[in-house]
Amino acid sequence: MERVANLDEPQPVPESLWKRIHEDPARAPEHIALESAEHFAPQAERWLARTRGHHSPAELAQIARRNHVRMSRLEGAAAGLGGALTIVPDLAALAWIQSRLVYFTAAAFGFDPRHPMRPAELLTLQDLYPTPAEARAALDGLGTRMAIQYVASKQKRDEQLASRLLKFVGRRLARRAMRRVIPILSAPMASVQNARLTAALGDRAILYYGGDAAALTDVAALESGAQAPPVSSA
Image (cartoon, rainbow, N blue to C red; front, side):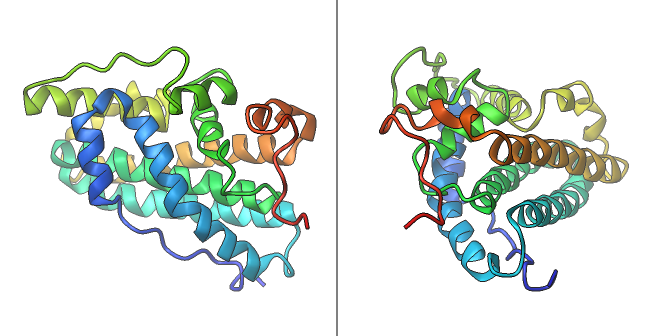
């Protein structure tokens, strides 16, 4: 049964997304959230179609969590070998894997991965916005937007991008980030940190999507005033 439910390996961060987050590092999380919807919603649907008859929603969610933790660990081990040279690509790849985890977890519990509130929930689960409604407003260009400032030098753009990505993947990582600039020695640390951060996000996503459905009432209020339609609904 476990073999049937294995996830396909994720694709690398798209070049088009790389370009956008480098040009607009202040809103890197929002760019990642929107791009992830295009890539991962269809993948989550296909995965659910293959597996829903073999596992319960809770089992599928745990399988998604376990597989994405593994992906994060492997990515961190590989990227950590480069130390400072690869910290930004490592953070972007981790953010990409974590985004995928949220879509697969939502699908596991019967929520439509294509629903426009999924990227907003992703940003909320990563503690970048207090509510999905506020995150969705920011994604739509409404409400209070983050300040966007053009940063001329590549070094300053990279620094700002690293800062935004650190906040996306986990605030606790920021305190340890400088330890990851030592090549070779940083590889095992990056591997462990990436896995822990992804596991923690998986736990939050399971609690969110697998908990009280009333907690998601505000999620779809912006769209139709009703709870987000489950994948399994007719």
